[in-house]
Length: 265
Image (tube, rainbow, N blue to C red; front, side, top):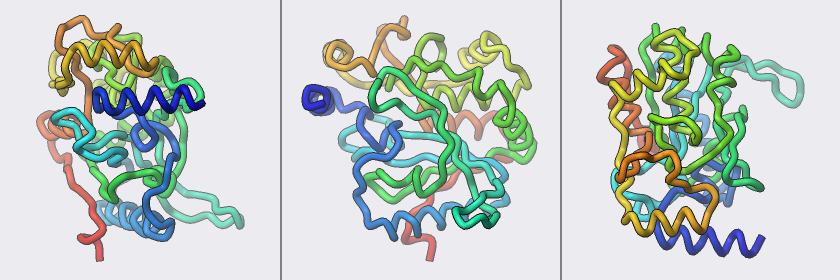
């Protein structure tokens, strides 16, 4: 464990990539009082409910912005789905379940699909802030169909990379899986080749603006970073911001907003 943590520390200082808890890992070190996390999580849920969202994309800040490559701010993106939730005492209450692709702690070059709740989602954040994308009502309907089907699970590639290329197969991170699910809903298909073709045609990815030598060194130090799925000299990946721009261009009626504690009293 000490060797792994030492490697993460070196890698984090070396290239500034989202590879620690709070990025796409579940849980992690808690930086805020639990009651503040609970309050903020409820505020995000209320905002989604006010907007009438049956399904939305939510993002969190798992690392300090200065530790991330240029153009990246939110480190983890998931689907929040309006659901009937059973409490520990057996009551059924309305709320949002969160559908994640989480990196596996014990095997950081792999991932799993995990369903949790907003308080879990925001538990390890560095900043109490949420990015939210509310798709158009029609796309929300299609997303609900995909998320409840085998397609959602079949689009998951468990081979994880923090900087996965959204245009190729073989490696995947949370944002690429989110993008694939979105396009499965948009085009009403489970054909991954068709999904990738549409992404190459219409989606604009975020360049990973890190010195190439540092990226090579990073891939040598850590299994969760690889350049194997990046045929171009300039690596690129999907982010909350690039997905937001994509939907605002091609999904008429979608809305992007940001939730901060000071704006929710």
